[in-house]
Image 1 (tube, protein in one colour):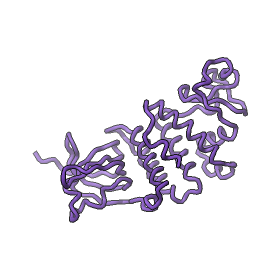
Image 2: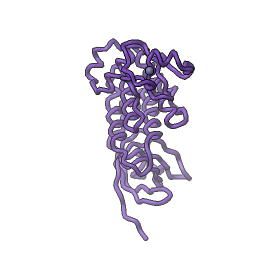
Image 3: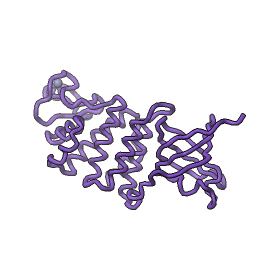
Image 4: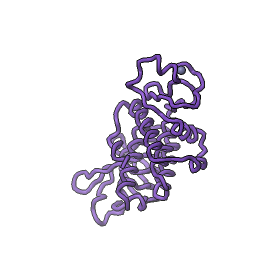
Amino acid sequence: MKSTSKHIKGIITRCTNYKEADRIFTLISDSGIMNFIARGAKKPKSKLSGHIEPLNYVNLYYRPSKSLNSVSQVESINSFLEIKKEYNLILKAQYMMELSESLSSENEDNSYILSLLIKTLSNIHNSKIPNLDILIYEFEILKYQGFGIRLFDCTNCNKKLERAEHYFSSKAGGFYCGNCFDSKEIHYECIKVSIEQQLLLRTISRKKYMELANLDLREKEIDTCRKLIQNSVRDVIGVQLKTVNFSEL
Ligand SMILES: [Zn+2]
């Protein structure tokens, strides 16, 4: 029985060649992670060629299948050429795509993650501090998936955190107050976080992105906050992402 054609939009995250002329690829779509085959896409005259590349935001028509959905038509909505011109930005984009993929599921509403990814990829080449855009992305995606970081009170005793350096534990999903930190054998799993770094995270959590410009942000502050979130991601998905080290370039 012939199945009817379906339509979907999404970002291609990975591609591999298959047999002589086909390409197999993974898409982050509104409906979660999906895998496709584009038959004949490697042939120079194919209408599919040129569109099926990693980091392309595409509009595609396909025939659903239990094994691999088969693409019949594809066009690029945004190829993110500004990112593809800069090696460092490509690595950052690869990391964000891997993070999105690891926190997305199959057959689930994924529209928030996709729109956040598109927004961040669209802005990053114009950003003064691309790592800040990535930090916001990491923070928001983790929160959306129900693994938000507790920033305002102690994860152990629930007391409000005073304005001071505090220790963060990805296992606890937040900070320890001074008393709890001193009384527990948890030093090995904690990262020391300065007042400025906590302020940065709190400003992001309140979505006061315009105020970030008023903070005295140095790369070190952003990098420590990113480290803390990456540890949380590692604990949530159970493995370290492959691209995590490259994204720091
Ligand atoms: Zn406490």
